[in-house]
Length: 482
Image 1 (tube, rainbow, N blue to C red):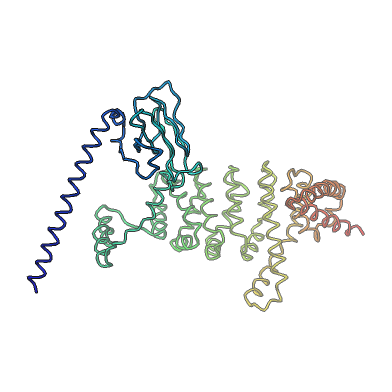
Image 2 (image 1 turned 180 degrees about the vertical axis):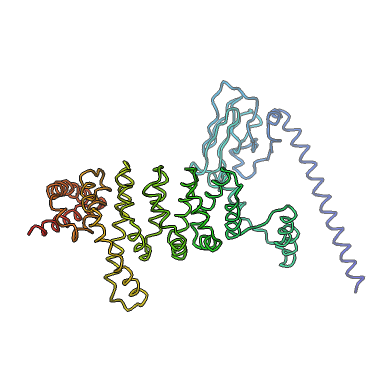
């Protein structure tokens, strides 16, 4: 059986060899015939710039019409180029090509071997809608617009989206990552060898507090340490760590420094530690920070230090009724009065008025919540009732101070804050506010016009809000006179 199979295979091989030999013989004979017949038109192949022309005997067309004609699929032109002639423009029909005329690539070209006449036309599949001619100086041609073309950027984006499917196994990938990157333990060891370490913010605060206590620390370095602490102490946990380390006492000592910039920076740092931090607020009052701040607010020779002290004082008093009660006990309103009179900056005066207004608003909110079922809130309400801020404001002459601000304030924001302060004090400053009615009426008319324009334009309700506040204040003052 195997002998028969081998015989069949051998016969098959001989058959293939015989067929190939016959094919090669015929091809050789035809090539020689074409070479002899095309001697008169061999110039058609000498001027091709992109490869040899392919000359094919045209048997697919009407042999009666095209007897003795060959078809040339050329890339550029047939014959020498005459630059004085116009460029050949192809159509769907055969069109005569003048001698030396430039022919775009991608056309059907035929030549009459007896007369040498050349004709060309568009490919059969080409249409006017699917081609686009281009001209780049010496090079011209036709583009098939039906085929999808991609820009360089589109190709780049496509390459980005390619995915490599031959991904390594998970174990191989883990080993590759281990070899490429160091573990956290290795990094710690390297940093330790370099005398470096990864520190938490708490550790940084601890080191800064320790450095702050050094007696021989230089002036410039001391200021840098204070500024660094001011940055970190805004964070509640960092401020509590600093307080537990005794840092508040160190700051109070620096607030007594003979250097103005050190007093200013230390006071500013204290304010950062106190901001919205009840635990640090309690520690500050116990440490004596309230008395120190009132001293700076009222008598410090530097207005910059007094401004920072006002900031720190406001962070200590807000949401802390115990500190507010101590503030009144230590003459805090008198200290604010001295700053108000001494300072020529209206911005500082507005900050003082805003602080007092916020404290009155705190009082009203918490006292009105006295009947709350929450025992913690009930206790806070009792603490606020012990403050007595309104009565203290009347006794220290703040009704008249607020009136002076009404007449001198400029700017919509300042007017709004003064009017809000007067509204919070109307119940205890009735007699003092009565003479302000003409001023209030003038403001009412002014802001009514602004509010009307605001409504027409459909913009924000800034002026409408101020107008409503003035309107309420006018009613309250008028009610006093009845």
